[in-house]
Image: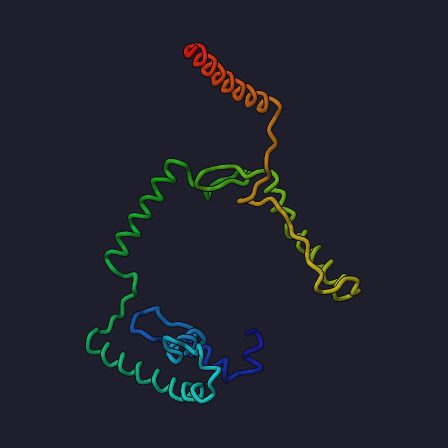
Length: 223
């Protein structure tokens, strides 16, 4: 894109004129890229069944490739004529409606109330890594992962290139070791302290003694 003005001046002129998008509706701000419009046209040509099963029959595939674009053109022209009769030209943006504006205003007021109660998260000056909505602090291992993950990725990339492409000491099909990094959805597992184990053991003993006492009392009453 930087050298477009010198290498392809004609394309650059069309680009400045805005001829890199196409509008398929009368709505404002609804232009799409040419490649996206091309993909949509391909979907019209393929139809509902697409090309499934046609590749094994050359004659059927040839008929489909010849008649498909023409059928898509006829369907598009028919839809365009019926839409002109049924719909008026709409120049408003699709979000420029009363319902959308009321919903947006309601969301803004809700966000303002939350900021009034919990504070503005964008004014947070703490050096801790925390979740904005819940203020939960991230684990130190997760913070360390975020600080080292770019360096670790670069080192592993250099190692891969040197071992498999430059020095060729390992085959390119050799599996890559998976990184088990501590991230937000996979924090490190905290080991229980000795006190927690003792409390858990006491709870288990208490439950066991209660069951033994009930069993012994039941046996005595039956005898």
